[in-house]
Image (cartoon, rainbow, N blue to C red):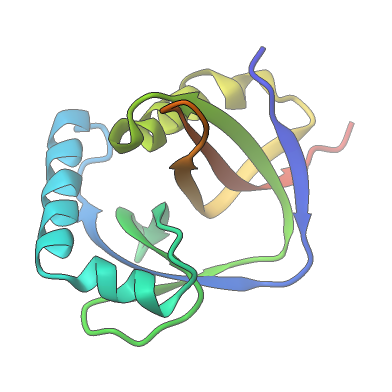
Length: 159
């Protein structure tokens, strides 16, 4: 059983990000390539650095349902007005928080996401993921390791 916790966020918050719409959510390879291309683009053109400088410097991978379609991108906590960026609403309430560690900063968010949707959510019986989005951050830990957490809005299941 993977460890997780339930954290309560008292107030609604916003996140600002650059990303891509995923036309076919089950096209894992295509979506990964599309997402990686967007990350490379916003890294090379300086847009991600600009966004990080406006916020606290912590980057998040954000998954959201936008206009009925899956959306994935990279951004920060807070609301910022940058051309091409999207601002998302994250609602107050309970969040399932799933931690993870690994040696590769670039793949840890995807590893945590795969773990959450591949097994963790099926193990949790007292809460249900309700969205409309989730976010994952990764930061340096000790001895070349990285630490990350995925936060998913959830509702307690009546029991």
